[in-house]
Image (cartoon, rainbow, N blue to C red; front, side, top):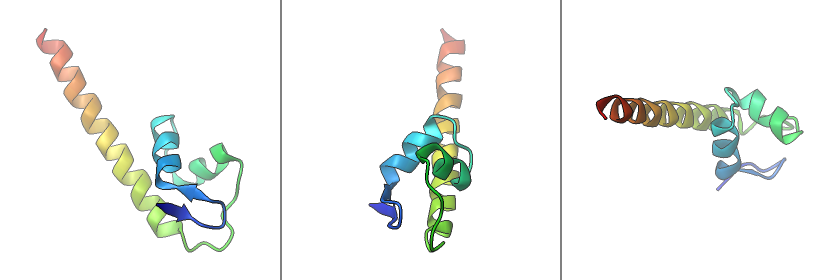
Length: 70
């Protein structure tokens, strides 16, 4: 799904960038070498970044627990 039509950024791009270290919508734009144009994607971008960060941290917590149990 396209998140930012102006820059052709998809949800996959955003997730990849967050998993690669981006911690904000602005960081995703910076990693892609683009800038927000119309701003209509802002709410969706922020929500997707937050969701991906939460999912990634939950997965990391589960992984740490599994390793500690071994």
